[in-house]
Image (cartoon, rainbow, N blue to C red; front, side, top):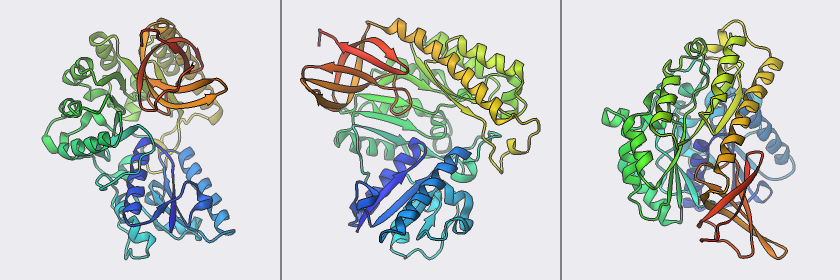
Length: 434
């Protein structure tokens, strides 16, 4: 039988989906490229915010309509079942089975109707023997769960407490990925900067980076999802000095107003942390995430975050409108912001950040920049090349495009010059010194 897997949500779900496909392949299931060719479809869902839940529900409904037209089994995994538990059958009685985040390792038992009882303990999948990869970069999930209790977030209830993966296991997996052609390794977790606190009694992300960089085949190592209060001097030193670690750091700060950060139950030293990083490492490219329209956010709070954005600390900033999550502390807060005002504030923040981006890219034009080639196609007598710079994370930071008379090998690197931008995408020309 052939299986198709639809993955929704963040890169952490992408990693789990690759593990799940590996487990199915190891049990002699064929992998289908699309649902039309599949006998079984697995939907690996996200429920972090309302929009993600709606996307998961919409996808399931579409598959159930297809199920009425052909012989198809539909299974739902991950965060949506973990959130709804048995009540998922009230909404989708036609699905063939479901498991939550802590039972993903039992997917093949579920598909083969051998699962006696679902364990609703939250968790994740980190220890599959094989992964199905589709690119020359790969995410490495270094921890599961979260110990922070941000007032807007349900991740701890969906994924459980913070649990680091043993360092040697990560090194072994990274080496296997590199041996299979992966050139860029992207470290992810709910909080990468706290890696090792549970296993080694102190954060040891700097040590993990040093050991991963010893893997010869790897060219780039990238960090996502750092937590402001855990960005140490030792970590910044490794990022600055290790040639394989991208001079790029993702630190979701969510806001800058002391009042809003307090309501969010987020670190109060966020501004000092960002300023400290900038002072110690001015050339680093920073990305962040912000929430617009959090309950009780007033005009002064909005002005404060807009002014902070305009200071130009970040190259990229993902802005999300506040989303009510039942079961969180923020859900019961008063003085909620209406949807129209949330969207208006979101646009103001996005526009402010785009102006910063344009200024920073202008300063980078005509400088030699290394790119990682992800796609190449022939278009008439030339080749259209799609790539990323070291300050562009996949799927979130835009791409770099150039045209060449010769084809480019996917997964290779070359030096180019940035000449312009179209939104967050960049246009480059060949560096004649290559």
